[in-house]
Image (cartoon, rainbow, N blue to C red; front, side):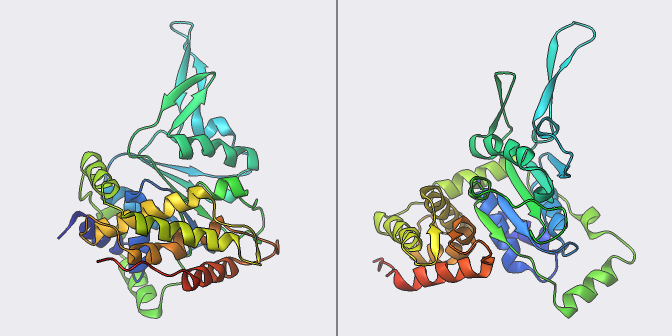
Length: 308
């Protein structure tokens, strides 16, 4: 059994009936991306993030986002050391291998923006001093639908930092019954044990990054992204950052399948998870499904290269 399969099995013991979603989150984590889980409360978004943290090992911190949360509550701050009389940096919860930003869109826009440097650069700057975050560094953020009370829509720049956006959805009847039965006597999350350490997981990340990508496959990803920019319903198409994220995620997908080379099918498989949330539609009230339709049309209109 591969390392990826062991992680998936451990997470599936907590989140039943969501194999595809679990595989997608694992793919994003191996690609050193960040994942945004959006859905109604109570469907297991936070449990999924915690299960991954438990299975992968390393350190994990959770941030419960609220309207009064300050940027320094995330990044940390300089405090006066009473003994030495000097300012000492007190790291915030972002200094962990896996950071769970729970209900991120309940935080104010200013606090949401505090995550930008962390997610993009892997570092925090406080009082002019830069502090490097641990590796691997992965943000798993959850958010409620923006039409729910007390939420702030994530700005485009913030959404662009996430490699993938997923909806868990309600479990089917059998999976929901299994969850109810299992949790009458125990908490499945407590039984999850790390299947590898952070060093081993970093080695998996390095292996995914080393997957070979032929120029034809890279250009295929570029053409898909460019097709979204030319769509009549789209004001802003997939950014170059989104194209890069698509290729990185596709490489991780290939690694999980046991290949050291990238296939057009890897790009196809990840495009529907990576690209839609990067699009800005002309209609400000457009739903996520409409952006997904644009990506599906871009895939249909873009001819995949034949690899020999």
